[in-house]
Image 1 (cartoon, one colour):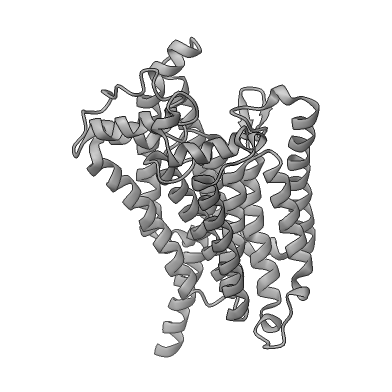
Image 2: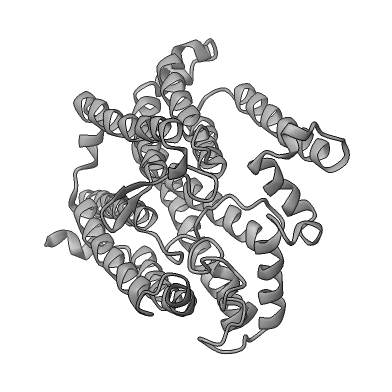
Length: 396
């Protein structure tokens, strides 16, 4: 219990506020939809989200007291990857053996009774912990001017295999988040800047080239029929595709415009009444903006970014490279996820099905984010304790 005095309230308070807002907004966004579409009780999704939040709170407490060095043990790493790859391989086989299992064009969920598990969410945290372990153990080698990327063959192969399995679902958003985490953690590991610049240039050129090609060039019919390509085209020209993949984006923009600066009031959204499909998931921000206005949306996004900046700050202050890399990885995960979600809602990025942290309905996302909160509280407490001991030694 002594560790409670080291609690970081700059992390704990925003997390609790966001989780509470999420439960309320899931109820507001889901009540009409699940009653009319599925014949369920209006409170069904709210009760589930509240249950997810309570289990998540338990995970926060567990990882706050957890010894993070356990993650560096070879047996733990093998077990972690065995579970992650087993779940991802199961989805790969499921997508080929039972195509009807796909939801919204992707086989990304494993159904266990009344709940669905999304292995990609677990893979994000697995990649962060694994790369933090591998890079911190190799830090002295990576700082050497003669260092070669060949020495990182093992982590590169492991993460690449994970990315391939995620892309096969297909989960483009999840793959891009894992890819972004990998690049940022590699850059933060102390590796030569020329490698970082090479990776950044290659990724930037690829994204710019694809965007230009899809915007201006004529494409083969087979490519145009691709679900992912249609989503990208819908982000570029949503109103031209409003009867297809552009429907969500158009209705999201209508909701934002209707809400204005101060919103129409909690529970009074019109776009959640059958216009936005499953409005309590990745497009819940559109309902929030319509009901609470631009001011309400900015407050929520501001709280999320406050957490992200806090995590980066803890990474900068960390005395341990292992703790620093975990902090950078978790912060980057939340940053990319929030950017993708907000970008899709306002029509600036393709719809990738990425949830808004702590707000959107979903168990897997909530559990992973809560575990991440517990880990960051743990790292913050470790830093405070080390600082306290240092000050005590100086006074002595």
